[in-house]
Image (cartoon, rainbow, N blue to C red):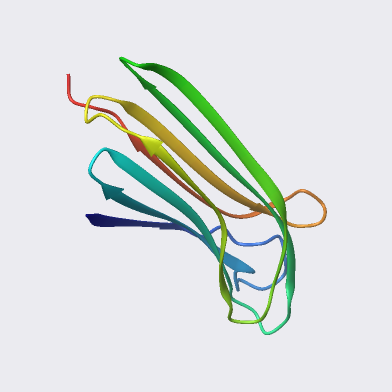
Length: 121
């Protein structure tokens, strides 16, 4: 089993350079299963009201699949929450792409994270 952390922070459209939150994908592979968890950590001293989108795509010999999960969340100051979790069956030769986006009330992306696995040919 191994963990693959990825992190990409986008700054909110505000006058300060302080990010509203951090988006993080946590990938845990156990055998041929890859469990994906989307995290949000509030980087402010106020509660954050956000929407999230977790999009997963996989292509391989067994076919292709797409999964979309979304919802709303309130994150307390400094809190790190798991927004959503999904598991896919994965062959090392499979292609997969995962996107996590956090959006404010106006639909503006305030943080995002993504990972793409392109198998060797």
